[in-house]
Amino acid sequence: MNVISLTRVIAADFYSGVPDSQLRALCDFLIDKYGTDPKHHIIAANEGNAVALAAGYHLATGKIPVVYMQNSGEGNIINPVASLMNDKVYAIPCVFIVGWRGEPGVHDEPQHIYQGEVTLKLLEDMDIAHFVISKDTTEIELAEKMQEFRQILAAGKQVAFVVRKGALEFDGKVKYENANTMTREEIIKHIVNFTGDDPIISTTGKASRELFEIREARKEGHERDFLTVGSMGHASSIALGIAVQKPDRKIWIIDGDGAALMHMGAMAVIGANAPKNIAHIVINNGAHETVGGMPTVASKIDLVAIAKGCGYPSTVSVGSFEELDKALEQAKSKDELSLIEVKCSIGARADLGRPTTTARENKRNFVEFIS
Image (cartoon, rainbow, N blue to C red; front, side, top):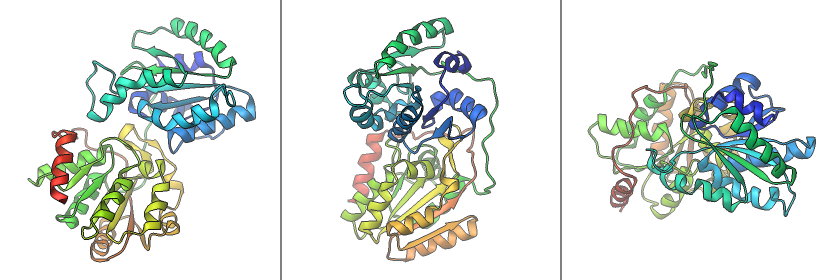
């Protein structure tokens, strides 16, 4: 189904959400039509943020908003849906568009398997009526379902369209790029050159995939690295939990700008506890690049100032490999919490692979290594 048919049937003029590769067609369409005009389209820091934005839109206009997300974001919406939007509270209607990663019977990565199994059940538990969109769903079928949904929405409830893999398409072309010159994979190679036998906690997405392949190319084991294959935004908190228990080990975090934004409160907790053995590296390309390249707000904010305000004693932003190596050397030698923001280009190798070890193997090897 062409995504234009979906948006025409829903007939909304405000969208907010977190980009998803399964919803790439929708995300590209929204960027093509609205860009990031906040009156019509706001890319949120996390899915709960998107729900609250949608609530504000409805309160201001009386109209029905749309929130889009990967199904992994259902956990982030439970609180605002149950305690704000629900018809027993403020009765705020909303249409959700949910990318169904890990659908039973469809091969996907390990972090999506269980989430895929419970996707529809979670919607049911939140009293959100849903309709599954497949490749063969017609606009007429969609329109008939939306007519039913409008009665539900009128009662102050929420509804969801759950999108199967490959169900949506968009003919337009949207190019995502920035002016930065360093690639993420080369940045991670430089990081690995300095970390030695120190543990690395890497964020979900292509950063962990690239770290895995770099170890393979160097013929090194993977026991030093904890690959946070899911739980976007939580790699830095995992690292803090390790660092306070292993004060004699230098702990490196390879983070992304989208992940850092998703749960930015983690930076405040890290800064307030000020573990001297953490080096927090945020690779900032201003994009949700792993799921297609849609923009984040990270290119418009000062991450270094935020980290400093959170209590990080050492903060720096770098835009070249020479500056990066200098910052890494200082982080390695200093006995204090540090943050390095690395300005990065958008893009990755077309043949980038995925980890060949299982998540449980990664955990077991990592635990043995740090013990």
